[in-house]
Image 1 (cartoon, rainbow, N blue to C red):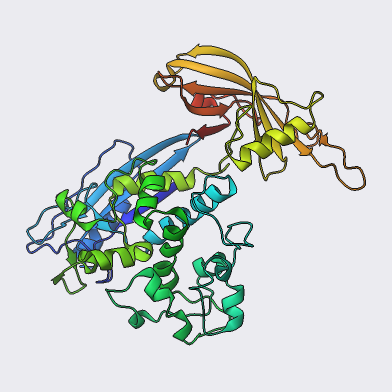
Image 2 (tube, rainbow, N blue to C red; image 1 turned 135 degrees about the vertical axis):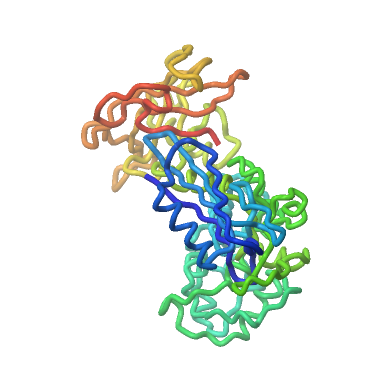
Length: 445
C-alpha cells in the first residue's frame, strides 16, 4: 500500500504557500532516502507544476507499507521564499484543510477517553456516552442552536464532520477576532440551505466550532490536546499550530497568492490562529506528514487494550476483568494473563503469559521478549435469553481462531514496545524480525 503526501506551494490566502522564484525556474530536488519510490514520471510532473506557474514550490512524501514495515521517500521542487531559498522536505507549509483530519482524530481520542474512564470532566446530567452519534444539543445545551429546531435537536457529531447539517459555507459571517464559541453562538441566525442530511455541502463552520468541544471536555486547549495526543506520540516534532514556533525554526514557507504576490499569513495574530486551528491551522512538513500517513494507513486492526489482573483503575478494565471472572470456575482471573474486551467478531481476548526469552532476529529485536498465548472468545457475562448464567461461546473452530503465539518486545527498562501475533493467519512463513514475521503487529501506545 502506498500513499502520497503533498505540500503544495499554492493554497487560499487564508492559509499558506511557498515562494515564487524571481529568476529562472530551478529544479530543486532533494531525496532523503534511496527507496526509489518517486518515479521520473512523478518528478517530471511535479517540475511541470513549477514550470507552468501552477505551484511556486512543493514537497512530496511517499509512504509504502510492506507487511509491517514502512518505507518513505521525499522530494522537493521550487523555492519557499522570495529570496530564492529552496523548498526542502523539512520545509513547513500550512496544510490547509488537511488540518481537519486532526480535529476528527482528536474528537475520536477524546471519545475513547470517556469510553475507557480516562476523562477528566463529566458529561452533562442524563448523557451516558460520548460518541460520533451523540447529539450536539445534549453535550452543549447552552450553545448549540440552529435556525431549524429539528436540525438543532437531531444533529450529531457525524453530521457536523460530514458537512450535512444543512448549513452552507457562509464564509463571510466570521471575523479574525472570533472564537469557536462566539461563532457557534451565532449559528442560530444563519439560514439553512438544506434540511439536515438532505445534501452534502462543504463548510468550514463546524470545523471552526468543534475545537470548543475539545476545550470544554478535555480541560485543555484544542492545540494542547492535539499536540499531546497526536503530534508527540507520532514524533511529529516539527508540526505545530504556532506560527511563531514555525517561523523561529527558519523552515517556514512564505505565503503567496496565485499571481505570485507575497501576502501575510492570515493567522499571524494569536486570536486568529486559535480560531482557525480546527479547520486549517496546522503547519507541517513532508517528513512529519509521512508519519501521519503511515499511521492512518497502518490501522487495519485498529487498537485493543489489555488489562492486568487487579487493574480496576478504569471502567473499561474493571468491566473486562469482571467479564472474564464471570466465566471462571473460581470467580477470579488468572494472575498470569492479560484481558480485553473488543467490538469484533469475538467479544473478548486473553493473553496468557508463557515465558520470557531473548531475541536477536533483527537489530530492532535485540533484548528481551515476553511470550504469550492468545485466546479469542465471545463471553456472555449475563447469559442470554431466559438463561442468565454466564457462559462463553467457543468460536475457535467456527472462525478458525486457534490459540495464537504472541511475542511482545521489551525495552531496556522492561517496558513493552509492541506485540506481534505470530500465527493468526495462514500463509507462507515470513523471515526477519518479530515485527516483520508477525501476522499482526501492535505498537504500544
